[in-house]
Image (cartoon, helix red, strand yellow):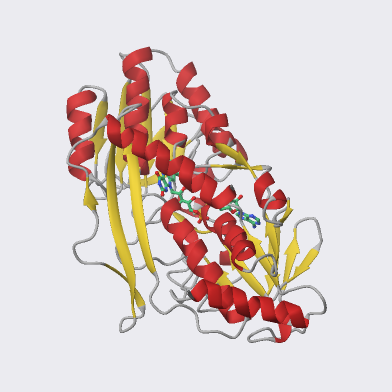
Length: 427
Ligand SMILES: Cc1cc2nc3c(=O)[nH]c(=O)nc-3n(C[C@H](O)[C@H](O)[C@H](O)COP(=O)(O)OP(=O)(O)OC[C@H]3O[C@@H](n4cnc5c(N)ncnc54)[C@H](O)[C@@H]3O)c2cc1C
């Protein structure tokens, strides 16, 4: 009903040819509708771009800035490392956004934002003016916390593979090249980081590969956190039942530096550790473009937003989504969440562009599936509702939960989740 009212208003505005004069648009628009620029074609940005076009019935001009030729999904990318999926399985082109939905996709990097003039400057030198800007740049790494990783040579050798793409394929090649009897070590930072269960899923996938292809090999997971941060009992059961003697879990191990030349991890207190294949996931913060625009106001890491609209608390007319935001308690940094942010933000931006009140009680669901083998899966689910008194999202009492045990049935659900969410954002 709300959406219909919005669309009706948009229709009326377009008939007048002066949609930009309605509501919150300061700049009068001649002929064409208001301009929304979206930075980042991942889970948050692609969703927001598509839904803005759909819900405005094509009346809002949407330009999506994204450097990659196609979308490559982090969810399911651990299965590429395990060898049961390929890069092609996790790659979706942007064609439907362009052809079906009329999103203008610009293959470039956003270099800077002039919030006063409402202009995005691109790496190519071009400028994109906007009425509203949506940023979903994901995360960037705090390389300054690992001095030995400063050089490009170190970054090319010791991979994170925490942004799906060339590093995913390169880490798989390193695992394939590792001799039987070799050691793969992964380190993970203190929470919050992108995808709480992701590292624990990754070691299952790599151990599953070793079990079949190089059974004398070992996996060691160094976790800066006190314990497994998500689905702990389920992962620990999988490690004990399926990967005993292969996976070793070492909590409370905070990496302070890396010697990339010798593949060695250095810790706050413990002895150095040398591996054949080293996979270091550094601490992270909001993507550079958001941080450089002064939007990362929470601990200089994450962008604080109004959860009703996703408008930045630091800059007007700029909305931030996905992993880049300062999350509400118990809200994971996940693709599923970023997708829900994208829709809530698209509806709110349409409301603001037409002088309407954004929806006052947004509700999001989240399910994170994790593969403990190539077929069997466990999940954690939660539901989050806006609380007007606290002005933040809170988990709905009694909602969600975790799997009782890993199963192949949940494996089918997990692949269904992935194909559905890719279709929802890019189909
Ligand atoms: C191994 C792994 C497994 C995961 N598994 C799951 C899972 O099972 N379920 C789940 O829900 N989530 C999972 N996640 C988390 C999920 O991938 C992220 O939470 C999600 O991608 C966040 O969406 P986003 O839009 O914030 O960022 P992204 O999806 O990373 O999109 C950011 C986009 O912005 C672009 N960009 C960045 N800077 C600029 C710039 N300056 N100009 C233009 N474009 C720019 C990037 O190229 C990128 O395409 C997983 C993550 C990892 C690493």
